[in-house]
Image 1 (tube, rainbow, N blue to C red):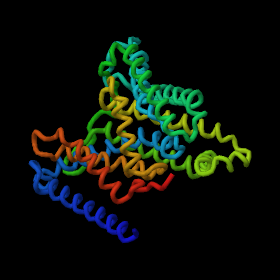
Image 2: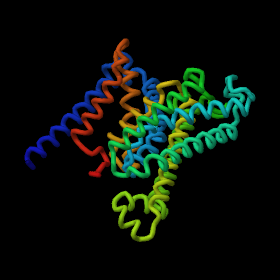
Image 3: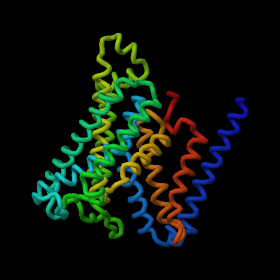
Image 4: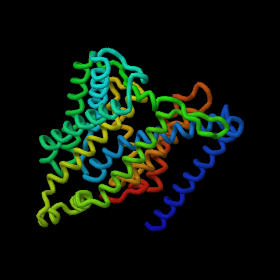
Length: 346
């Protein structure tokens, strides 16, 4: 058995290195617009991939906290994103125009206004998640199938209610502040890039650092990690483990709301967006490993890189096949690291 395991591991690493080498050669030399002949397009694609990965991380970090760390199967994470997105759109329009049906341009949005909307949407998502956890999930700890079925049902109900109350769930969007939504000169051969995307990257770095400090350097974070490993022992020490887990679920749900405001400022939200972001979060957790914040960061970056580069460098007319490379990435990671890059057995 050890010999067979070693063989599979070496084979997995061999396939990984071969796939990486082929992808690098393709992008640099063989694509329709190879990087060596169009470095500006390559650099722009690279930044697109990194900033897209940053958005994946913001949303998936909440899912990692709830599903990966607390071991709570929350299949309604995408629904929290969907609700927060439409709440953010409604609040932004009411604050600026007084009419929820009037669209808003970036020139009308201030930085303070945008962050107020972010706070409102995050609190709505956090409170909705907290109600869901207290009413339906608190009594089903450790029962993964039951949790999955309950949260799937909640997700369907929430999505239907969003359709009813938003005129059919039509595509809507909100705007970044005008001071952010402009191109920034990076002083690299006159190359300019979207300030909004750079803002997303900076916000994701701040959120990642704040989460790391909370989980590793605060008493609440330590109790969360200890409670996951041995809940009975933590409770025996006099810690109200249910309250701590409720806080963690609230924070994880808020992160879905924060990601919704960022994502909706970048692209539109519509009926079905909840499923897309649930899938994105699942992919990130599988790649990075359950219960690992670093894994969520690495998984988000790999997911963003693969998705963006495959869409940009596949032959013309074949970009619809870019999604296949996501599953190739999953297969390679699971072949080399069955629990994910930073994962460990539950």
